[in-house]
Image 1 (tube, helix red, strand yellow):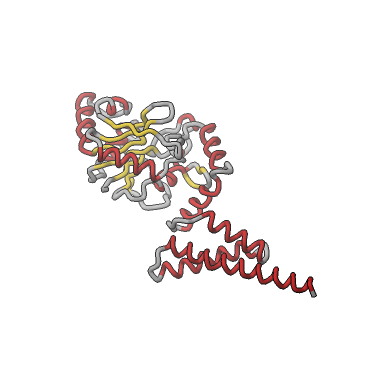
Image 2 (spheres, helix red, strand yellow):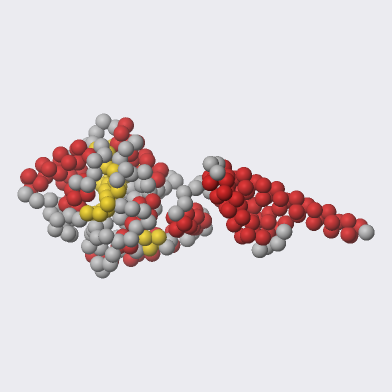
Length: 292
């Protein structure tokens, strides 16, 4: 599926005192980088806002004049796109994930209308978490510019009111996909959420992979089981050292053409078997020593 992405990152963040909101960290990753991670397959990713460091390359642009509102910013971003579908996102969505993006794109392709929009848990449609047919967006924006003489300060609702959009409800697995950080309270809530017991490991693994520039499926349970076996059967410091060696071995296998995820699984299996044999041998020796 070919699509471009337009991310709006040039708002004034008035309720945050005018700070550079897209650069604010949640889980040690900038909000903008978290959104970029949700749409890695975009053919072209356009960020409408001031240039700043990002985790992956993007194309930059700005509305004229800067601060002209979301509709003007969207128009500026559209000028940099060529794909038949355009994913439109705000830059302050810490919990947006790839499956949600894929669901929006699928609904936009399968539907007969002008695109698909995420519907939040309160039943409200979020036009800045949506996939649109590019031709429909360009047509309606041109009509609005002619009607109003300018797109400056026009709200997005005057655009979406003219479009036929398929609603995509958030799933139980990703109920916070539409959560945005408009206030300091929102930011604190997002930071607390990722540190909850049920979320922290997945969030940490994603952050590490992002920091290291790798994209590999990791079976967290398998690695934790391996670390447990190494710690209990050998010695506590063996746990981190063993998992490091598994990663190194998997990288070598992947460099030789093996599937990275399968390489991790196979290296983990071999190391776990070794740890269990090591423990069994130690246990047998202890029993023999006791009987002698």
